[in-house]
Image (cartoon, rainbow, N blue to C red):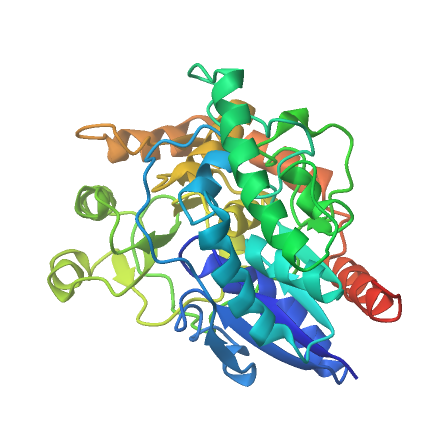
Amino acid sequence: MAKIEFAWELGAGTGHVTTLLPIAAAMKARGHAVRFLLRELAAGADLEGAVEIPREGAPIWGGPQVNANPLNFGEILLNFGYHDASAVKPLVDAWRERLQSSQAVIANVAPAAHLAARTLGIPSFEISQGFHVPPPAMPSAPLRDWEPAPRARLETADRRVLDAMNQVLAAYDAEPVETIGGLFTNRAMLLTYPELDIYPQRGPSEYLGITNTSEGKAMPAWPSGEGPRVFAYLYHYYKGLEPLLSSLAGLKWPALVFCRDIAPALKEKYGGGALQFSDEPMSVSKLLPQSDIIVCHGSHQMTAQALLAGKPALLAPTQLEQFLIMRRVTRQGAGLGIAPEIPNADFASALRALAEKPVHAVRAREFSRRYAAHDREAMLATVVARIEAALDTPA
């Protein structure tokens, strides 16, 4: 059996582990030796089955980010060390050390791991929700379609990244890449749906949809209260957390909330009565069908699960990818969004609108019906089969 590394280099939060864990667990069950190489070592450690997968820290670049508003994926990479070969090479070399005895790399946002695998001649796959796999055009597509994106600026960013990458690849006599999206050609598996892909210009593609997600075990009873049931997964660092909790508590609708590392004072102030906090990650697959409204930050996995369950969502993004997903959902009418920069956001009115205007639930149910025949277990088997086929094929 093969030694397979599951790599995460860029980004934050548990979603990267949530995405990789079902695949890692399936490969482990088939007898392969699997290991997590993670940007955040503790991320997702409380998810079911996570403790069974060994984990180590991933090589990452520790320098400062220079652009708070990147226009495309090239500019994102410039923020993470891909501005110069002198920064990329130590990163790739560190990944090469981790991968010396490995037979494959399965990544979720780990471009340096792909570069290292390329130099070592081992297969690598990007398991992606789309954001970090731009179409293979030059330059990579703009992310912010609501503001100007000068082509010259996009090309400058991409060429600088490609120059740094290709200098490192040349040092190991590896084939160069022609575009940033080209790094993932024949290596990407899109675990998303066309409605949630933030690159509408991608064109016809194979969308595999999400797997059965790794999740918590908690199954708290719904609190008493009148009104729609609200299921919320929130981040403790969200700037609007307290006003959001205040709105939920004020509505007195039955609400179950999980917020990892929430301040005890907030938990004490707003918990009790119709709003109950769960101390542990909840079983999303079991509780979503019992809910009427989902509140989250627009992470791909939670948003997709809400729509697959036919539930309208209130999305309060904390970063660009979530904001772009929010825009895709709101344009379909399957939910409402609160942009990060909105001052004094009226969460209560947004929640009431989701409850009172049937169009949002109708659109969410349409999404659910569209993918009702999607077999997540069969999709996972497809992913596993492609990885195992690559193990038997010379790189």
